[in-house]
Image (cartoon, rainbow, N blue to C red; front, side, top):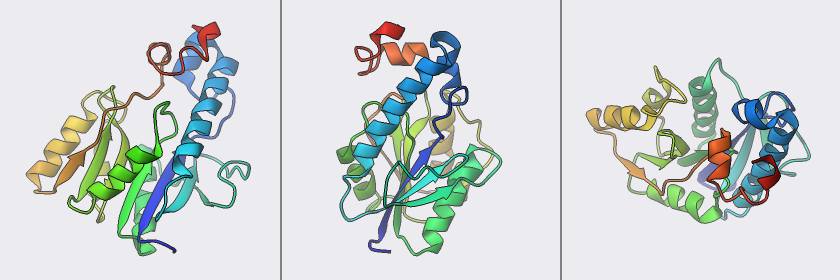
Length: 203
């Protein structure tokens, strides 16, 4: 451990037919995989530039050595998204990290400044969220284990962030909200994203 701060990146393995299935339903599996590979590249660039922060990458099914070379890599553990995220955070706290931020890999506008802001927010808050346009969140940070965030949640719903912050307020757990970004799950997301020109042939 070289830092008290840890950044966790959650990556779904880029496999045709399994990546971006909602997008694939409209533009095809091969095109959806192309989009997702671009999103992974954006994520890799943004997360590799963070200073004073260790980096762990958690893959959905198998470790890909060609991505994030030289970084610590793991396979996600758990039956659902909540369990997989909490398992990674729990492991980080067990290793002695004080501030841990986790991000996904489907954000066309993710940058190192946003991630650094999330880490800094944990100096004065228990939890930090980066809200996404669909009502969920693209970033979550914790300065202490907070398992309730991951328990009994309806993942991928437009009420996720509201329900989670309401629960935290009821438990007097402080939180900070970062800028809102859009993730790319559907063709509508792609059309309204900064990647629309690059992938205009699919739109």
